[in-house]
Length: 217
Image 1 (cartoon, one colour):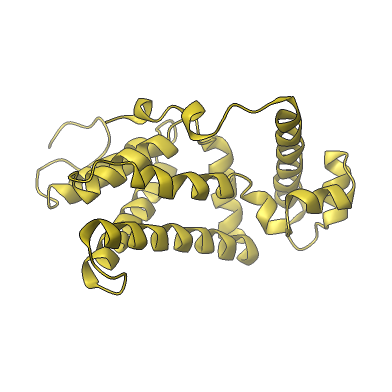
Image 2: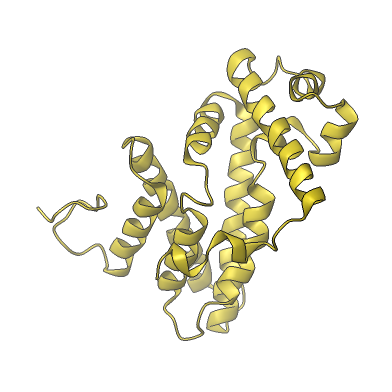
């Protein structure tokens, strides 16, 4: 199962002219925010600064984002909105890790995720506590969604050990894969995530180092 099983156009209905205009405005604000945070720092940058750089009013800024840190993660709401339904659509008898692999591969594919921007966001999160807090909150939302889905699939309460463990393992795979990807410019995040999940599914057996495309040692 590859990202082609979930082409981007199937995740969201094709936007009309008005929606495309709104999306351009949203992206302009988000790009301005990231640029200014990198140049001047998060604390020193105001909503008014971001609005001016994006050529919109502060009131328009707040139509799209409630806070400055929310503007950094402009695609987060879309990802979270798509994540649960995509998991729910996986075949009932499919192993949990296989389902997570397929959905993760789709959402992290180059046609969906702007990897260059994501690298910049992670670098900013490493320096700015408010951005880091927002990023951890996003990861927490994803983990809770996995717990909910896994519990439903297994017929267990969300308080049970197994769904919680599935979610925790999946998030650890994402974190380690992301760190490995950051250290390997020119590679794709989705490849590292699928490789990490494959290793987990195999029980960490095998001789390879897990690097996407690498031959076993």
